[in-house]
Image (tube, rainbow, N blue to C red):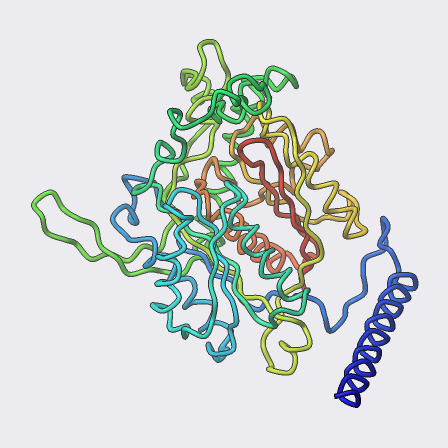
Amino acid sequence: GAVLKAVIRYLNSIMEETRRALGRLNLLKNQIAPTPTAGSLPAKSGDDVVIVAMARTAMTKAKKGGFRDTAVEAMLGAVLKAVVEESKIDASLIEDICVGNVLAPGAGATTSRMAGFLAGIPETAGLSAVNRQCSSGLQAVMNIVNAIRGGQIDIGIGSGVENMSQYSFNDAIRPDLISDQVYEHETARNCLIPMGITSENVAARYGVTREEQDAFAAESQRRACEAQKNGLLPGEITPVKSFVNNEDGTQTEIVVDKDDGMREGTTADKLAKLKPAFQKGGSTTAGNSSQVTDGAAAVLLARRSVAERLGLPIRGRVVSYAVAGVPPDVMGIGPAFAIPAALKKAGLTVDDIDVFEVNEAFASQCLYSAKHLKIDLKKLNPRGGAIALGHPLGATGARQIKTLFSELERTQKRFGVVSMCIGTGMGAAGVFERE
């Protein structure tokens, strides 16, 4: 017994010394590692998280478009399958999937798990669901990025899906279940302000005129229509076989392969005739707000060293990510604070970025954020934004990554940013590099 106790004490002392040594090594690593500063991008390494493949469905009008009768697992399954096929990866190597969703119960965790199986991904891959409201698709991607960076996995998929035809914001909050404390606390109470009113608050507080909003919205429509005519937007889309229900009880099989939200011939003068949608005398209208939309998108990610060993294509790398909190009553200004935070982490400046994909929840907030950061509007949403394409809440962030890289590859540019505002008062932003 005495000998055994001595052996145990000896082993414990070795383990403790090992822990101390690892701590000293980590401290030394942190001391000698260069801290990114403006103009000092982190060098490429085998531990980079790289983008291997991306896919998105068409973005279709809620209640009216081609996905109105399509289950979320069918939409999501199509893009999960697409990234596996595009990359030619052995699906059994995928270790985890994260799916952004806002409106389905439980962020659609169960239906998303089903989607993975429908896509041919085996049960050995885990799955989680995330709801950070309008940034859910981007957050899902970054959850996988962080799992790879943390050494938990080597390969995973970040994705997002939303069917706004079938699920509603009306089910998200039960006012009768909210405590009196919320109504007595101004900032907490402001989380209940309708999104359209927060847009009006941004316009009024920061001086974004109705004329500016309508001109911005018209340009979004023009760019989207042009990108569709030129084959740029169609080139992003994974066609999905589906169906629509007819009034006589029959079904018609269709292929959904085209964004249907853009309005040809939209002008600022025509938009000026629309009535305010949320507030009497306001400036936010149906024409200068994002559309209610159905869609899905996915991004396959891997550790660079693993991707290279497996011979997987490398489209680019994830450089940085940041989330910033802002007052809930002007939640739309989130990108104005999240983008600088992400750029600082990347060691880049606004001028270094070639393409900005900033979600157009409302013209008021997107335009304010761009002006505040002095973003060249020619670099902002060159293929149009959510005013023309629509905003399927949980899918938008992942969709923007696909659109961003399609444009970076077409123009042979290097850096891009994806960003959006977030209900209850936040902004999120990711910085990406094309390779």
